[in-house]
Length: 291
Image 1 (cartoon, rainbow, N blue to C red):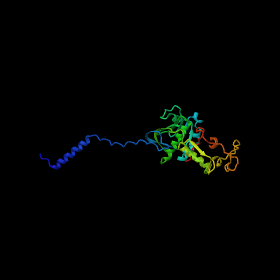
Image 2 (image 1 turned 180 degrees about the vertical axis):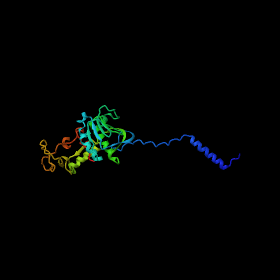
Image 3 (image 1 turned 30 degrees about the vertical axis):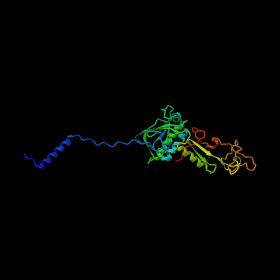
Image 4 (image 1 turned 120 degrees about the horizontal axis):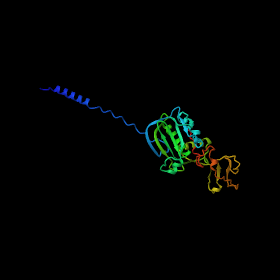
């Protein structure tokens, strides 16, 4: 029996169709869900283990803490709700109760595992654990919890909707014990509000020491430094400091007038009275930043 070419093609097409039906279909492989990269935080996080998904800040989200730690976390609890509201438009309530889905959890835990730099981690480090249900910030000290909240605020600020945090785990600590900034108010006057805002900005970026240059005798000329005219910016009515010149007064030894060189101010005189108790003695940098 002679098979015509047209018939052969039909038979081949039929065989291919039957074979296609006999071979089980292979499901199309879905694209893998990308793992969350390290959040853009300043300073950069020391360690980050990314996962998938996001935590979403919700209307009912709360800031949860252990009731026994209320006193040690009083500075964070007093300011963090307002700071989150400044960034997101939502002000979470405070609660000493058990965490629920959508809550931010703060805790002090001295038993946290050691990091690479144990000394710095135990003093100022923190862990930042994000799941789809909660954000948990834990640290050996209240100071570490504070720096962990700075990370949370930065991540929320950079999110398009200002309400999402990538799921993952961070372990973070500073590389340096002193992370400071100096402001010279001896040569140029700055208002108290400006200085407070700068201190809050320093806290935002986890700087911990603020040095303020209060007085200057930079107009030396050909005279010795002991006779150079000096201006002193710090104004005080404290009776314990009667020898301190007022802000508008100047001291000089050039005309034979006894020079009243003021003693260097202590931290309690140069720092705002609202300095959190967990900051270094010469630092006001952990005051909360305005956003």
